[in-house]
Length: 342
Image 1: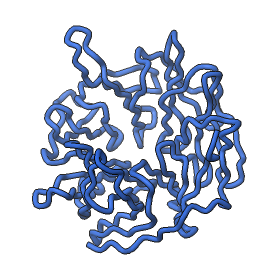
Image 2: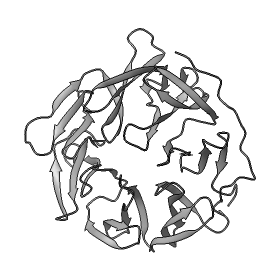
Image 3: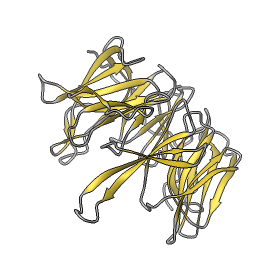
């Protein structure tokens, strides 16, 4: 499998992208894309917090929501027109859904004050997976707590899923890795039957709509893992082998991103096998070509951090706060979206 030399351009200070002034505003996180040029930004501190719609080209902004409480998990739906977030205080925590005008569409109290894992249904956008770990008061054992929030009737449905990361695969089907058996299952919310096991070899997966990229350990080389693409309806579309990244004994899954159905998939891929407990390693933003089983390097990355491809596939948000943007059409340079100091 070929891996060409990536373009290794340094960050350009005089970029065409605006910066959030950290001396005036505190960035909590850039949540994600709202369209090709606009992102959702979570700003604020102990005094108050905001969700704003920000154009990273010209700096135009619109406040979507303001509160004196804390905002925790924030998640945009697949259609990029609704935002779900947790709004909390010492007294209570609410789940809130707003549209891009800032209108409140749903609000419901939840008996959990920590960060949730949220997964919007890509087809039926009134269905949302909410999950977290719950400690049993008698045994002190952590167990996965999974609910479906139905926004149409504003009700919760408890789900017996042994995973805090269930992912919608279609309007009714979902995938998850069982935390006890470590096997991949597919379930159907319309049925009470036990979910069906798909694989006992898959150690993780990335899912966007009906594209699934499964992660499997190599049974030949202990320093590699295989990425297997299935699209659609779990039809195999190719395999790419990449260096394994670990943290001690734990395998770290690569950060992948796809913005369009069966569109381009990008990945933050290690240049060589790496144990993050020993060193930070070196990584490259790559386009994953499953048809030819190849990686097409784009640019070197400073570290192993999340990525998010824009809807028009021209830009990639990068970093633990998505605080950088990579211009895929402008020599693949990396630009900071925040000022360097507070």
